[in-house]
Image (cartoon, rainbow, N blue to C red; front, side, top):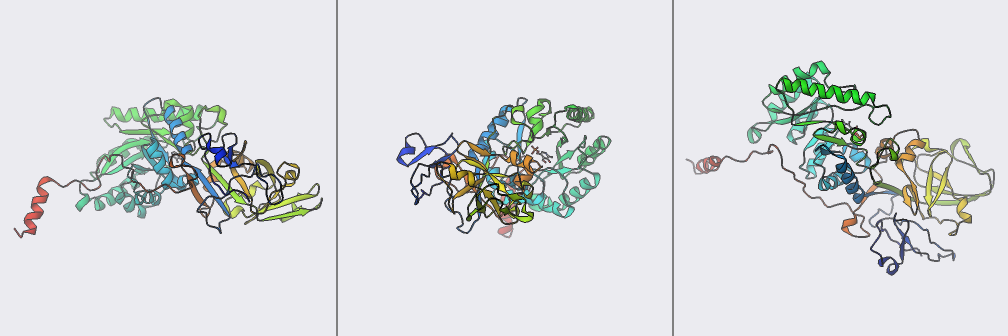
Length: 479
Ligand SMILES: Cc1ncc(COP(=O)(O)O)c(C=O)c1O
């Protein structure tokens, strides 16, 4: 029988042998060679399902919180101009799980969070997260009151948006909340064309916000269209325009406390774009849309995805696999069926291109990816030391086994998209397990809910004035 372990991080030397384990290329810990029922060695038998996995689950995702800490450190090491890090955790932290990732990166040194939708900000607050949460773009007007109530920081892109936000803030910042001002950042369109004030609208917008007593004009930002591309011209033009607009406003007496423009690529390649804040999503999550050698950042991959074989079949040469019979066995073959398909986020565009890891070996996905299944040609394992896999054996779809690794970037290129698409389309039905090296070996647990509370600029509930208590005591006494 195979040892049923889940030890994503290498234990201290000496414990390997006691536990019957040995490390492989620093990537994980695998059961030491044992004979299986058929007498064959199982030396490269990979990760087992994590404890706590629903026995009816078809696949599972592991998220490495130590890798996030590493990535935060790598980013902070790049901030040579005194900028702070805003961690972009929109879209469920690019598919990794917004709440645990937000907690981890705030503790690791990020100071703010970025989200696209008010619901995302509300969910983070409901989970007890107290750090500033920045909306990165426009929101439906009827969502604004919740954003104000939960003290989110708004991005405004038009005069109408400022007016609507001010109206809602006047209504909301009353009673207990009297004196509270809703924080606003002017979004400025310097070339992205997806929202923001045009350059000639910026001054009137600033005046409009400044005239609103319940709004606090904390910041201004812009967003790059092409910072990950090799031609620097569009990015440098955006940097120059944004800086000029800030200078113009300063000359008119408007100075923003928080100015920002850099996304991941700009943080990596354009130090001149690091103003008061950098807004990083991709590199925080260990993802790039450019070759890793270009940036010199020591990022670590944060996510792996695994499943188990549900069916094995020997088929003769000439047999075809899947819809439209796109794969034909060149020789007598062994085919393994996996219970994962495009419903889970394994992209159909990987048909004819996908690869998976079994026992540390890369094996090709055979034929069309279907909704619930994909097939792997495991014939090469017939001649490998461990022999053929068994039904129930773990297969890695993303991540490492031994020295081999299937990267998200590679999967993105193969399916003609970018890494963000791969991770955000991993189905929410696939449970995420959080590996925390610091929390001990063998742990695959969701981090505990803990309050993360950097100081607020404006308290949600203003502290009572000293005489308020005596006023209320007098009223209670009927005075
Ligand atoms: C306004 C804004 N800032 C920052 C980011 C983060 O970008 P990246 O993931 O490339 O760091 C995004 C992502 O789309 C964004 O919309």
